Image (cartoon, rainbow, N blue to C red):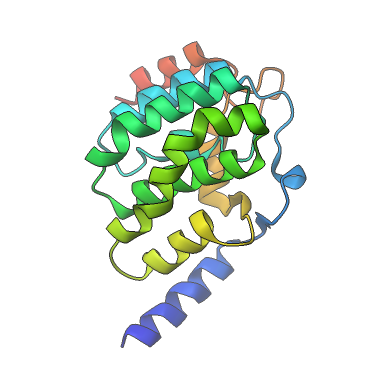
Length: 184
Protein backbone atom coordinates (compact mmCIF):
# COMPACT_ATOMS: atom_id res chain seq x y z
CA UNK A 1 0.00 0.00 0.00
CA UNK A 2 2.75 2.45 0.96
CA UNK A 3 4.69 1.63 -2.19
CA UNK A 4 1.61 2.16 -4.37
CA UNK A 5 0.91 5.50 -2.67
CA UNK A 6 4.50 6.59 -3.25
CA UNK A 7 4.41 5.60 -6.92
CA UNK A 8 1.08 7.36 -7.52
CA UNK A 9 2.25 10.48 -5.67
CA UNK A 10 5.48 10.56 -7.66
CA UNK A 11 3.58 10.17 -10.91
CA UNK A 12 1.19 13.00 -10.02
CA UNK A 13 4.08 15.28 -9.12
CA UNK A 14 5.88 14.44 -12.33
CA UNK A 15 2.78 15.11 -14.41
CA UNK A 16 2.15 18.43 -12.63
CA UNK A 17 5.48 19.80 -13.92
CA UNK A 18 7.35 18.85 -10.80
CA UNK A 19 11.12 18.80 -11.12
CA UNK A 20 11.14 20.95 -14.28
CA UNK A 21 12.74 23.77 -12.29
CA UNK A 22 15.07 21.63 -10.19
CA UNK A 23 18.80 22.14 -10.55
CA UNK A 24 22.03 21.21 -8.78
CA UNK A 25 23.76 24.51 -9.50
CA UNK A 26 22.98 27.98 -8.22
CA UNK A 27 23.08 29.93 -11.48
CA UNK A 28 19.88 28.57 -13.09
CA UNK A 29 18.02 29.24 -9.83
CA UNK A 30 19.09 32.86 -9.40
CA UNK A 31 16.39 35.46 -9.94
CA UNK A 32 17.86 38.70 -11.28
CA UNK A 33 17.40 41.90 -9.27
CA UNK A 34 15.78 40.43 -6.16
CA UNK A 35 15.50 43.03 -3.43
CA UNK A 36 16.61 40.82 -0.53
CA UNK A 37 15.90 43.41 2.18
CA UNK A 38 12.29 43.89 1.03
CA UNK A 39 11.87 40.14 0.63
CA UNK A 40 13.14 39.62 4.19
CA UNK A 41 10.26 41.78 5.44
CA UNK A 42 7.89 39.39 3.69
CA UNK A 43 9.77 36.38 5.10
CA UNK A 44 9.41 37.86 8.60
CA UNK A 45 5.65 38.19 8.13
CA UNK A 46 5.37 34.66 6.70
CA UNK A 47 7.41 33.18 9.56
CA UNK A 48 5.06 34.76 12.10
CA UNK A 49 2.08 32.99 10.57
CA UNK A 50 1.36 29.54 11.92
CA UNK A 51 0.27 28.30 8.52
CA UNK A 52 1.33 25.54 6.18
CA UNK A 53 3.60 27.95 4.32
CA UNK A 54 5.38 29.41 7.34
CA UNK A 55 8.81 28.12 6.24
CA UNK A 56 8.49 29.19 2.61
CA UNK A 57 9.32 32.83 3.29
CA UNK A 58 12.94 31.76 3.80
CA UNK A 59 12.76 28.95 1.25
CA UNK A 60 12.25 31.37 -1.67
CA UNK A 61 15.55 33.04 -0.76
CA UNK A 62 17.64 29.88 -0.51
CA UNK A 63 19.41 30.17 -3.86
CA UNK A 64 19.85 33.94 -3.95
CA UNK A 65 23.00 35.88 -3.09
CA UNK A 66 22.87 37.49 0.36
CA UNK A 67 25.19 39.78 2.29
CA UNK A 68 26.51 38.94 5.75
CA UNK A 69 24.01 41.41 7.29
CA UNK A 70 21.14 39.74 5.42
CA UNK A 71 22.44 36.32 6.47
CA UNK A 72 22.37 37.51 10.08
CA UNK A 73 18.73 38.52 9.70
CA UNK A 74 17.90 35.19 8.06
CA UNK A 75 19.64 33.27 10.86
CA UNK A 76 17.72 35.28 13.45
CA UNK A 77 14.38 34.57 11.79
CA UNK A 78 15.17 30.88 11.50
CA UNK A 79 16.46 30.45 15.04
CA UNK A 80 13.56 32.37 16.56
CA UNK A 81 10.94 30.20 14.81
CA UNK A 82 12.31 26.73 14.04
CA UNK A 83 11.68 25.23 17.48
CA UNK A 84 8.01 26.23 17.42
CA UNK A 85 7.41 24.80 13.94
CA UNK A 86 5.45 21.58 14.06
CA UNK A 87 4.81 21.00 10.37
CA UNK A 88 7.41 18.74 8.78
CA UNK A 89 6.94 20.73 5.57
CA UNK A 90 7.91 24.00 7.26
CA UNK A 91 10.80 22.44 9.17
CA UNK A 92 12.10 20.93 5.93
CA UNK A 93 11.78 24.04 3.73
CA UNK A 94 13.16 26.57 6.19
CA UNK A 95 16.06 24.26 7.09
CA UNK A 96 16.72 23.63 3.39
CA UNK A 97 16.94 27.41 2.93
CA UNK A 98 19.56 27.71 5.66
CA UNK A 99 21.56 24.80 4.24
CA UNK A 100 21.66 26.22 0.71
CA UNK A 101 22.45 29.76 1.83
CA UNK A 102 25.24 28.46 4.05
CA UNK A 103 26.76 26.17 1.44
CA UNK A 104 26.62 28.86 -1.26
CA UNK A 105 27.82 31.63 1.04
CA UNK A 106 31.25 33.14 1.32
CA UNK A 107 33.13 32.97 4.63
CA UNK A 108 31.39 36.05 6.06
CA UNK A 109 27.92 34.72 5.18
CA UNK A 110 28.81 31.31 6.60
CA UNK A 111 29.96 32.94 9.84
CA UNK A 112 26.55 34.61 10.25
CA UNK A 113 24.67 31.41 9.41
CA UNK A 114 26.86 28.95 11.34
CA UNK A 115 24.59 28.46 14.38
CA UNK A 116 21.47 28.24 12.21
CA UNK A 117 23.19 25.79 9.85
CA UNK A 118 24.26 23.50 12.70
CA UNK A 119 20.67 23.50 13.93
CA UNK A 120 19.26 22.97 10.41
CA UNK A 121 21.40 19.88 9.84
CA UNK A 122 19.63 17.99 12.65
CA UNK A 123 16.08 19.09 11.83
CA UNK A 124 15.25 16.12 9.57
CA UNK A 125 15.10 14.05 12.75
CA UNK A 126 11.96 15.99 13.71
CA UNK A 127 10.19 15.11 10.46
CA UNK A 128 7.97 12.07 10.30
CA UNK A 129 6.87 10.05 7.33
CA UNK A 130 8.01 9.75 3.74
CA UNK A 131 9.41 13.27 3.44
CA UNK A 132 12.06 12.76 6.11
CA UNK A 133 14.48 11.13 3.67
CA UNK A 134 13.94 13.80 1.00
CA UNK A 135 14.31 16.60 3.55
CA UNK A 136 17.54 15.08 4.81
CA UNK A 137 18.94 14.85 1.29
CA UNK A 138 18.07 18.51 0.61
CA UNK A 139 19.59 19.70 3.89
CA UNK A 140 22.53 17.33 4.27
CA UNK A 141 23.03 15.78 0.85
CA UNK A 142 26.24 16.00 -1.14
CA UNK A 143 24.36 17.58 -4.07
CA UNK A 144 22.75 20.95 -3.48
CA UNK A 145 19.20 21.07 -4.83
CA UNK A 146 18.16 24.45 -6.22
CA UNK A 147 15.28 26.02 -8.11
CA UNK A 148 11.61 26.42 -7.35
CA UNK A 149 11.13 22.74 -8.29
CA UNK A 150 7.45 22.79 -9.33
CA UNK A 151 4.59 25.07 -10.34
CA UNK A 152 3.49 25.62 -6.73
CA UNK A 153 6.96 26.74 -5.72
CA UNK A 154 7.22 29.11 -8.67
CA UNK A 155 3.77 30.57 -7.92
CA UNK A 156 4.69 31.12 -4.27
CA UNK A 157 7.97 32.79 -5.28
CA UNK A 158 6.19 35.18 -7.61
CA UNK A 159 3.99 36.34 -4.73
CA UNK A 160 6.78 36.55 -2.14
CA UNK A 161 10.06 37.53 -3.84
CA UNK A 162 10.40 41.27 -4.38
CA UNK A 163 11.82 41.87 -7.86
CA UNK A 164 11.27 45.50 -8.90
CA UNK A 165 10.79 45.87 -12.63
CA UNK A 166 9.86 42.23 -13.19
CA UNK A 167 6.06 42.22 -13.31
CA UNK A 168 5.93 38.45 -12.79
CA UNK A 169 7.01 39.06 -9.17
CA UNK A 170 5.75 41.26 -6.37
CA UNK A 171 7.22 44.77 -6.69
CA UNK A 172 7.55 45.78 -3.04
CA UNK A 173 6.81 44.82 0.53
CA UNK A 174 3.92 47.32 0.45
CA UNK A 175 2.39 45.58 -2.58
CA UNK A 176 2.63 42.26 -0.74
CA UNK A 177 0.94 43.81 2.34
CA UNK A 178 -1.90 45.25 0.24
CA UNK A 179 -2.53 41.87 -1.39
CA UNK A 180 -2.42 40.14 2.01
CA UNK A 181 -4.89 42.61 3.47
CA UNK A 182 -7.18 42.19 0.44
CA UNK A 183 -7.09 38.37 0.75
CA UNK A 184 -7.77 38.30 4.50
